[in-house]
Length: 176
Image 1 (cartoon, one colour):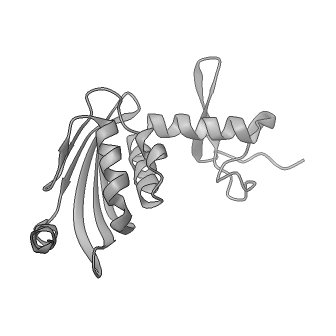
Image 2 (cartoon, one colour; image 1 turned 180 degrees about the horizontal axis):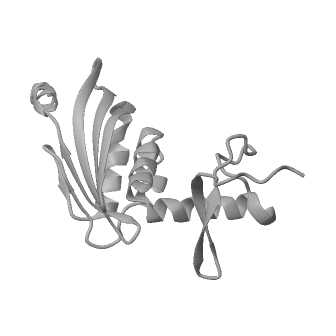
């Protein structure tokens, strides 16, 4: 039997009978992630826990949303957005409906090559990312982007994007 860890650092959390229980972090845990699977918890329960944790932590939720966009998985990205009251604003588009926004992203998102996170700041339910968007219209380019997302009740309620859109405007003005 392994010796118990003394004052282990806190890691994941688990809900049992309505109470939140913190689990110790284990550096050499099984391939399920950084944390052990206590009490015979199965993979499905672990994945459900992972979703619950993202819903509780605005930064994890917004990071998961960005991962879905980078993978061009727009159905998964839609799952992180609020069903009602969603707002999106950027220099070239604005949406007040998550379904319309995702439809637009699935149409235009093909130009996205990669999304690199340079820095992230959180302030309660607000998450701000400084990103490098790699995209290709006619040639590969990179745009510096600031994204501010606001999370309410486990969903992204508002996204504001700031970047220099002059390249997009020049490209579309030159198009026949």
